[in-house]
Image (tube, rainbow over all chains, first blue to last red):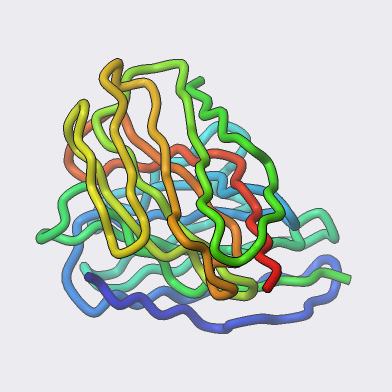
Length: 115
Length: 112
């Protein structure tokens, strides 16, 4: 199984500011995924981050609001820009591994509260 | 888009009871996964299923990939207090580690 870490684990931010979330995988992976989990809800995919190319965003999510970087095969960042209280959620990154093919492992999540 | 219907939404059971939850999809899936999420944590993979009809166990957990490839169930036998949490089904329609579609979750409460 992959070991995925995220930083920060939680943050409380002011409206209008931005927060960058980091995700580190302990092995090289082609794809990494960013999900949002709103309070009491299921996980919704924000975007797929491929190394060496632009991220692919799902309907309802745009690059200006959620810019993503993928500088190498073990690391990605998600920025939540110009935050509003509606952005208060848990943000999770995940990655499949070469050994597990379609099995995806998740980081512990970043719990964001926007005031 | 594809949707997963997961039921029940919540369950309240006594320690020692067996539990069953299921998911159905509007599309054929190539992979079914079952996750558990504890408060303040990310989802943890419990069981992965790859073939129609496949039945797989992980300790007291058993999951099956439906013959029609549009459904899956998860059973937990002899529940214990640490089984408390939210269980999510997830699946994808493509190969090679593509993004997952998640069910809405089943919240399990176990009283001792």
